[in-house]
Amino acid sequence: MNGVRVRFRFHDELNDFLALPKRNVEFEQLAGVTDTLKHVIESLGVPHTEVGSIAVNGNLLPVSERLSEGDRVEVFPHTTPILLSHPRFVIDGHLGRLAAYLRMLGFDTWYDRFADDVLLAQVASTEERLLLTRDVGLLKRREVELGYCVRSDKPHDQLCEVTRRFALRLRFAPFTRCMDCNGLLCPVSKDEVKHLLPPHTRETKNEFSRCQNCGKVFWRGSHHARMLGWIQDLTACQ
Image 1: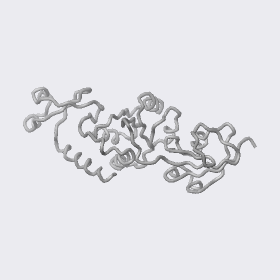
Image 2 (image 1 turned 90 degrees about the horizontal axis):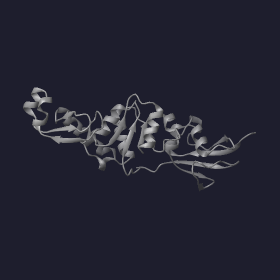
Image 3 (image 1 turned 45 degrees about the vertical axis):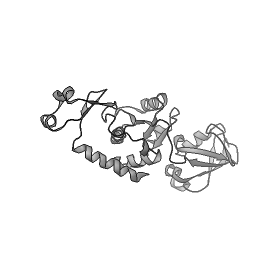
Image 4 (image 1 turned 135 degrees about the vertical axis):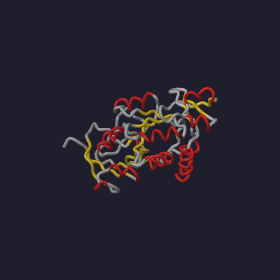
């Protein structure tokens, strides 16, 4: 038999990625003699970005290690919340509303609805951004070092989920970034932008911001109060 027999046990949320018979139990797995821990763990369905630590026979080992006959492997998720020194994100094309909401809160968020997996992984790697996706296969790409599989399929719940996992609430800087293009907003006088305003807005509003990248003009309309309500609701996500 060209392989080694080892025993695995995955803990807590990592079981989300396993086949039902392998969840919350110890099970035997055949691994190739040259397979690394990363290879075997990902072949079972768990992306390396979700793994916090690995103990082999009670000793913590990196994902690059290989396995030996009879090894007992325990795989643990990250301890949460995960504190990011510089919260910067790249979002896949299926999470457009989440990208807009993160920008609304002031977070530097790269998003292109047409970006393929190669480009998303490249941006995550070269710009040192955390990749948010619901595509488990994308998180298994070798160049992706920081990533998270978003569990919820509803944008507001996704925002709460990400806020909680990465302790973002104290880092909020609402309405400082363009929700369309990610550019920074700066205050502008009414005279500078009045030629760009709808008549009613020109008559009733006096405070404006403008995106330094795309030039879009923002003011406090009815949507502003609605967004403030969402931000307040996020306090319950901690």
